[in-house]
Length: 327
Image (cartoon, rainbow, N blue to C red; front, side, top):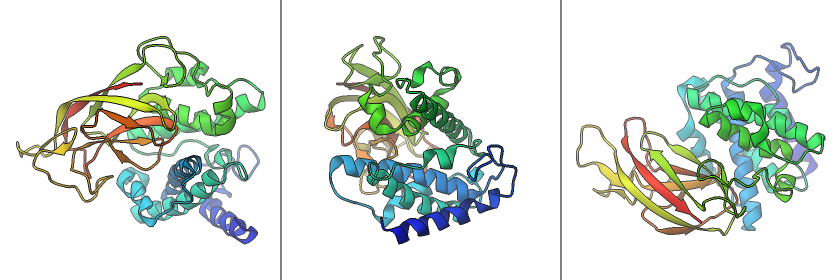
C-alpha cells in the first residue's frame, strides 16, 4: 500500500473513532477504553475482522487479490438491529473490511492492528454477538500478553476461556490467534496441544484423539462453530443426516443437506445460487462454500471450520442437521 493510501486509511480510522477520544481514556493512549456504542465503529470492527480473515486466506492460497464489492454482503446478512443504525453500521463495515483485507493480505509486511481496534470493552449487541465480541477482545489481550512474555501459545489454559459459553470461547480462540500473531501461533503449535478426548477442540494435524467429531447444526442459526481447526488442503469426510423446516406453515418447504426439496433459492442467502437450506461451510470469517450432500471435501483454507444453513432468514427455521466430520 502506498504512503498516500496508508495516510488515507489512518485519517478514516481517526474520523471513525475520534468521537471516543474525548471520553475518559483509561490507558492514556488514543486507543484506550471508552464508552462509545457507535454503530459505525461497531461495523468497522466487525468488517475489519472479516476482511482480515479473507485477505489472509487469499494470501495463503496464492490466488492473488480477490476483493469484490459483494463481499460486503456478509455484513448485511450478519447485521442485527441491536448494533444501531443499519446505514451507519454498514458504512463502517465496508471501511473496516477494506482495511482488514489489506492488512490480512499483506500480513508479513504490515501486521494487523488488532490491539488498537479491539483493546477496549465489548460493544452491546445480540446475546450471541455480545458473547463472541467479549471473548474476542479477551482473547486479543491474552494472546498479546503471552506473545510479549514469550509464553508458548495455549488459549485453553486461560480462566476466562474455561468459564465462557460456546460463543465466548469461539470468540476468545479467534482473538487469541490474532493477538498472539497467526504466523507465530502456527509455528509453535498453534495453541492446539494434543486433545486425546472424543469431544472438544480438535486439530486435524495433531494426530491425537479420535479423528472425528459429531456436530449438531441448528436450522435457526446461520453459523455453528465446529471447534475443529483445519489446514488448507486437508481431506475431510462428511456424513449428514436430518432436515430443516424452512417455513413453519409450509410442510413442503423442507431441506436436506443438498438443499430445498422443492428446489427453491433464497436470493439473500450466503450462497444465492445454491438451494435454500443447504449445508454450507466457511473457514474463520472467509467466503462461504457449498457442502450439500457431498461425502468428502478439501479444506479451502486454514483456520476454524464453521457449518451453516444457506438461508436468508434463519430465525423461523426449525429442525437440525447432524454432521459427522472425519479426517
